[in-house]
Image (cartoon, rainbow, N blue to C red; front, side, top):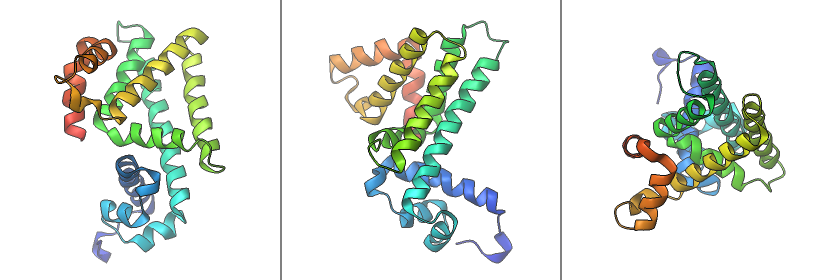
Length: 197
């Protein structure tokens, strides 16, 4: 636990908790995660988490909003990278792959949000986030390109979230699917995922 001499500003502490919660919700799912597990992952007390966020549901909603914000920010940086000789679509795709390589919890928390789309409180947040990402794609792509990009992103999410990586080199179908999905970036993606696991 943190002593009085180790006090961290509230905004920094909030981000620390959200980072830990992203990992915990990603690893355990919404149903399996608890505010106690989040507190332990953040290195603080469970009452502090509850005092800051209220409920597990509100904490997850803020994790989901933060996740969508991280994705949109990564896409914005990729779009703004005019020094790159690559078209905008591949730049955004690489930005997404890099994001999930460095923080697998981002994509797993996002998937948890989509799974809970039927929930009366979480569902609207997940839909808003999905459409916000789509809107950002529509600013730089045609509707068809944006749809294909989103579909490719969901395929990437599914491959990684379902942990099919454990079947690479054991199942030709898995090898083929990963090779088609990631192309010459497959080695880099697998290395990144092994670091973030």
